[in-house]
Image: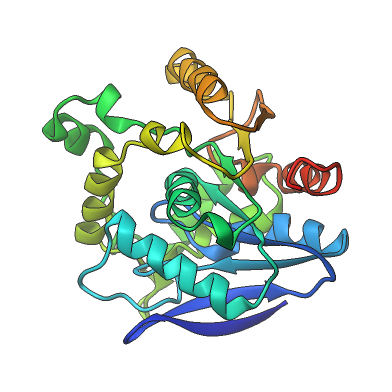
Length: 281
């Protein structure tokens, strides 16, 4: 693995982690308030299977630049399109998790010739406005905790306690969501204000207006471990199956929202299979 920096827009450099390979390429896009390192376990397994892989820190996240503006869907998908150009991969499969899944759908809608397909990991079908008709309610329920100033050792202890079945790649990826300050406390790389700006954009996004006309094959990889909205998720996945042109669904029935952190090898196997059995062309 090596790291590169790609200019996605004037003055906005994005950090990209790359694994070499001769097989079909994958570009991995993280979710809201996450980072590229969350994909390390998946990328390692895909690279071991011969694939070229890249994982990007989106603007405002991880080691990428953090401008004050540009967190709407159009600008962020423009960023990813520039990354695809710079990578030089031959129409890779773009894989997005959560918010990143919705970004992948938007990317495939706007730039269908840039990729051979998309895979959405517990995302791509997120319609927050259907759960929260009023933005104020969405804002109240989904605002992130204010963790800046928490000792790093407490964050790590919580991560290991909350995710005892995660491999070390997932734990390291989760911890990489935070800057560790000289005093040993943390601050999320994504600021609270930018987090809420992105959340508002996600609340406004309507992926099903894109799915119906999508030309790209769509691999949906939903997690079934969250019982609080399992029925709603199942309904959204079934709706996607009715509307998408070419779709495959592979459930991870006992998985967390962060399937890529919890089950990276199994997730990579599903991606590899779809790239070698003709699903992605």
